[in-house]
Image (tube, rainbow, N blue to C red; front, side, top):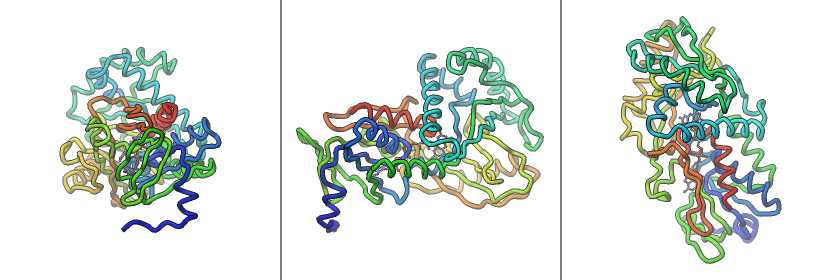
Length: 372
Ligand SMILES: Cc1cc2nc3c(=O)[nH]c(=O)nc-3n(C[C@H](O)[C@H](O)[C@H](O)COP(=O)(O)OP(=O)(O)OC[C@H]3O[C@@H](n4cnc5c(N)ncnc54)[C@H](O)[C@@H]3O)c2cc1C
């Protein structure tokens, strides 16, 4: 049944909207902030279907990263050298923008560095990384002006891991919840209207406006911007595919020595320390098809695998308990580049952030707003 809004509700939240943004994740909120900068007197409304941003921005692992060595090597097989450099440059610039906009304290930015670990039986990936490391450092010189990757010995606490690991001193970690809370506060303080539990079900474009439907209720806006990432399949003719990512976190572990962000088994697994716990995600490669879904949830197969990795490889000599499990929905596609484009006269989108939205979300939000 349609909500019976009051005169005041209609006048304040649903009338004279210059810009309506769908999705209150990293991209949607950055787009709103950039619109506020460009149009100080405009009325900006963000609509979000979840209680909180309900896609990836409050679910992720908080890696402030721009690609492990094996990932960059793999990307070079499917993208041109220039495309790979441009994407890394954008991720790096996005991280700086996020830090500038919100402040390192607000996002609990910790520059502990990042590591790539290799499973004992994976000679091929390690050999490939060893042979290509100098060339990749060379390739990234114009962006970082110094070597990014170096070899280190793996920490003794791990098991079934090769002695050689690759260290990236530019990588860091953030507190995802604090980051999103800071972003939401900044949006509110910039006079951006935010409404939760509002699912945009359709839209109809007219000469000078767009009619936005929230079920049976609809209202007019000047411009409509979609920042719906993994949920943008229909909008983009399936150029964006949903990709669910499952995560777990342990109870606090006494004397935990693991500190930093870790990529394991070509990035199929990723883990980090947080509040004396280990947060571990991944194993999507066990069931790519099954995980191509916009439904939240976990599966026995993937969760058992994550636990096995914890027991056998990451925390082999330590008792631990799993405290909590969750999942998030990413937006993937054949190309790693996000889709930022004008869809029609008054409708735009900034979607397909892949597994790197913490890094590029701020810039993609800005680019989306600058299309208007
Ligand atoms: C488990 C996990 C771990 C990750 N780890 C990392 C990491 O360590 N580092 C990193 O850089 N990236 C990571 N990512 C990726 C990163 O979180 C995303 O790329 C980023 O959050 C995408 O931001 P977004 O704003 O585009 O999308 P989202 O945060 O998904 O926001 C889109 C929003 O649109 C809303 N929405 C969708 N449809 C509608 C509708 N019809 N009406 C109203 N609202 C709608 C959704 O509810 C959602 O809140 C991870 C992702 C996951 C799931």
